[in-house]
Length: 59
Image (cartoon, rainbow, N blue to C red; front, side, top):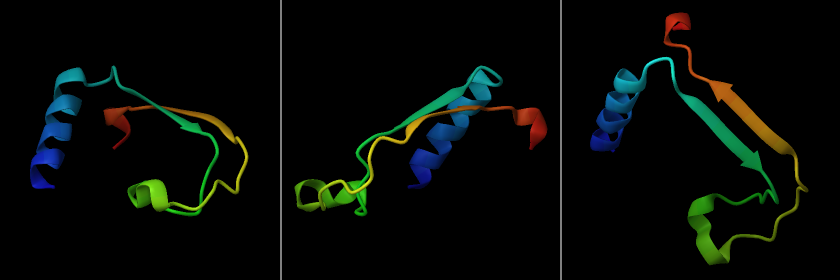
């Protein structure tokens, strides 16, 4: 986990203000992604797309 955090920080430091996060909320289940094939069937329909722009000057 520590290596993942350091890698993520290196990416943020390199790209700076040019980072965008896109999340698609589609066929949501009550289970975690880590449940794999044993996850419950999706119970929430499509919600939509979330877009976040990373602005380091705000933090």
